[in-house]
Image 1 (cartoon, rainbow, N blue to C red):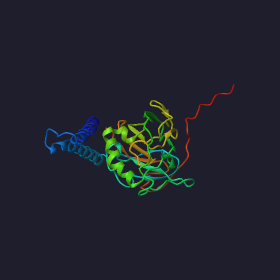
Image 2: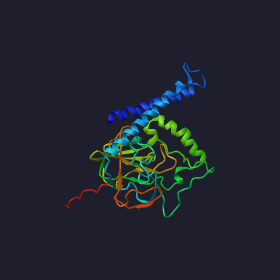
Image 3: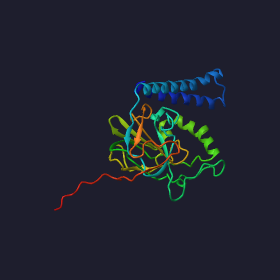
Image 4: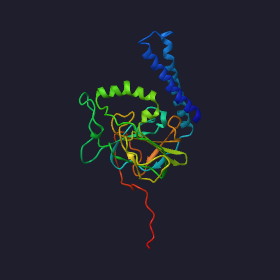
Amino acid sequence: MSVRQRKIAAVAQRVLWLVFFVQFVVQWFVDLPYNYWVSWLPALGAIALTLATSRSTRQQIAAQPPAPVEVEAPVTGRWSALNSPATKVPSHGTHQFGQTYAIDITAEPAEGPARPAPVWFWPVARHPRDYPAFGAPLRAGADATVVHAEDGQRDHLSRSSLAGVLYFWLAEGIVRSVGGTRRIVGNHIVLDLGDGTYAMYAHVRQGSLKVRAGDKVLAGQELAECGNSGNSTEPHVHFQLMDGPDLDSARGVPFRWRGVGVPANKEVFTAGERAEAAPQPEVPAR
């Protein structure tokens, strides 16, 4: 599929799902003017478009396997990996939104409060500040230009219990999917790394942006903070490389973090300290 075709398919999927859910709600109040099975056609159409897009991406990867792009890790300190492309591809179970080689990471500090473990019943949810990842600086993986940056969506409570997870999958996730990519990735930043490669940081903390669209940044420069906005069960960093700035039409690009590689699921790693801001030119003595 071309970029334009992938964009059209992504928009069509959302429209079809929206039509399906509207019918589902309306039929509780009035009788639909057509047979019940007809109301399922939008859902079947959306699923068919998803399968067609995924098949096209798989064929493209098989025909022209993309080479990994080496960048700096987006964080410093001690972290562990989840949903890693080192363990499976696509890492998040889908090729949509350029997520083929995306990775999630959570903070695992050697000292201080540990990351709360998931529970069956209580507490049903936790405040995001209970997690050591919340508020951690997000850093540029390379010298780049900021293409997109937003931080207006709220950081919600964790979905760390059985009830929370069920709510996440059966209600919140569906609503966010219909709402579009912004509601799925939450607050996010897209960087243009050059040579047709873009980096995306998702679930950014509300109000934490330190850059704006059009800014030039250097590798290691702080961009924002880790949050819990969007389709997120707990504060974590979602990082991915892709071949375009539009999440609806971009395809994933594999990455390697300099000095770290690609950590597998549950692998703990430590990323080193880096410069936080662009060095200032020396001022001649007078």
